[in-house]
Image (cartoon, rainbow, N blue to C red; front, side, top):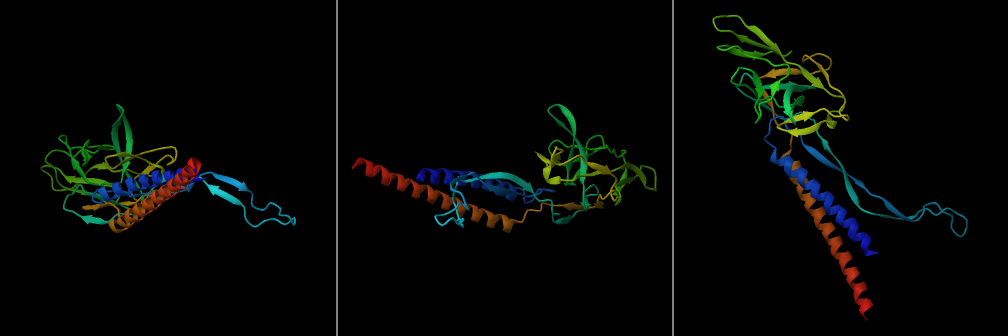
Amino acid sequence: MAILALHSAASGMKALDTALDVAANNLANVNTVGFKASRVNFEDLLYQIRREPGVLNAENEPIPHGIQVGLGVAVSGTQLNFEHGSVDPTANPLDMMIEGEGFFKLTVIENGDPIVAYTRAGNFSQNSEGTIVLGTTEGAVLDPPIQVPPGSRDITVTRDGQVRVIAQGSTTPTTVGQIELARFVNPEGLKQIGQNLYAETAASGTPVTGSPQQDGLGSIQNNFLEMSNVDPVRELIALIRTQRAFELNSQSVQSANQALQTVANMLRR
C-alpha cells in the first residue's frame, strides 16, 4: 500500500537532511586549521518478506526471486576522513604541522574536570605566562606543558619535537620542552568535541603516545600548518546530489499521497 511508500520516502528525507547538515558543516570549516571532513553512511532498513526467495513453485522447483519490500533508509554513522590537509607555510615559529600519523596532546576542561584531548591543528601561541597553548577560544595547553622563559628569542621546534629557544643573555639554543604525540588504532572512532579537538572513546582504542618519529608517529614541521582537508568541489557536488535526492523523495511522497487520495475518492462513491 502507499502507506509504506510514505514511510520510506519520509525516512529518506530525514536521512538526507542529516547528509545536508554534514556537508554544510564541512563547507563551513573549509578554512579551519586541522579540520577533517566527515561523510554520512546510509543503510537500508527492515524488509517485508512477502514471498521468500527460493520457495518451491508448482513444478517443485525453487523460484529465482522473492517479493521483498524495503521500509526505507537510515543514517548508520558519520565517518571522519583523516587524509592530510593542504599545507600552509607561515612565519609564526609556534606554527607546527604533523607530517605523518599522530595528534597533538592537550589538556582541556570538560564538565569541570581536566581531560586529555587530541588535535591535528598546530596553530599554537603563548599565553600570558609563556605556556604554549592552542590558538582556540579556550587556549588548550599542550600536554605535557611547555613554558617559554621570558625574554627568549628564536623559538624553534625540531622534527623530533624538541622546543628550543635562545634565552635572554645567551647565544646558544636551550631545550625547554618535548612535544608528545599520540596515535590511535581507529582514529575514526574519536569523539569530536569542538574547538578542533577530539576525545578518546571505546571505538578509537587507547592512545599510543611518544615522541615524534618514534613508534610509528609522524615528525614535526615547524613554520607550517595543516589546513582543512575539505574539498569544496566535492562538497558542492554532494550538496547538489543530496538536494536532487531530497526532491525525488518528496516526489515519492506526492505520488503516494495521490494514490491514497484516489482510494479515498473511490470509497466516497
